[in-house]
Length: 391
Image (tube, rainbow, N blue to C red; front, side):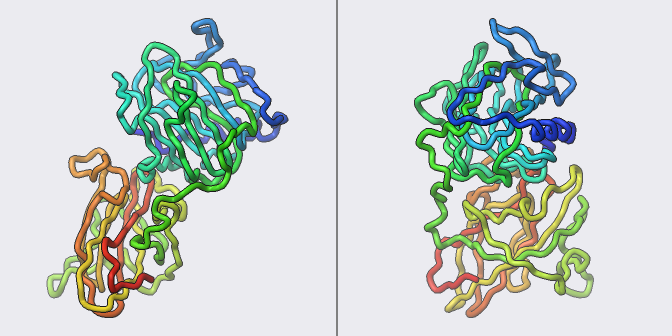
């Protein structure tokens, strides 16, 4: 399991030094940063700088992943290259554009668990880090397969241009991962490396972005009018494990627990982001480890007639769906549990589907959404929009 605190507060002092002593970035100039204490600050206490295969390298001195940060350098755009050799299972990777408090960054990493498979789509991952949260579980789109080697160097190149990213692994002629829109909150910042691996030959070419555009690329959901994009949201509330949204009344129907849903609370407008994701993490930040929170979102669908429509929905981590005040669906997407949704607990439109019974006129869709694990949000699409109008 990946750590939610991606590097930790130990980086704060290092980042402060980095931002206070920025090196001049000359366009296309290759800047090499050998793996030595002169260039890299140890963040974890298991960092070992050494000569390895005739080059300056760094590795962990135990079976835990290391964490190091590049000193005196702020990265915005350009090309980053390095070599990595695997030592043990894990998620070796790079954080770039790390902000001063180390809470936000862009993140790329390799999943390595032995016996590489060049068709395994989950080998590579890009995810934004928002308020310490690695958004991997709501970023299924940004995964890819790659050919990686055991027992020898793997060469990695990242080309970062404004909002876009291309990643090359071993084959420098063909990008294996293209991210058309980086989803982090930062535009520049520090660089860090993590993982139970050996790193060497780290270099940066500032502003060298080739033909990669800096503006956002195409959103595959942009032209699809079936997605529900306009919502209202309430502030989240604490929702301890073992507690349920519903309260059973011995003399009436099962209703929402009024402690968890305040009908008089302020509703704020909330628009879905790229990929039609309702990104609750960006709005509300991290849920503390071991805790759980609940928020409510709602939207309105107007129907010309009484009819049913199928809704496809992705979500993380739990949902309670109501139509016109009546409970319609309860579902869970717990990563690592036997009942987690495909693909392996990630939030995608394939997670679940259900029939939505609409009355003639306006229909209120109310959804309770919880978070305890990494990214938080939903994606919802109505399969057939004939006779409908969305809020």
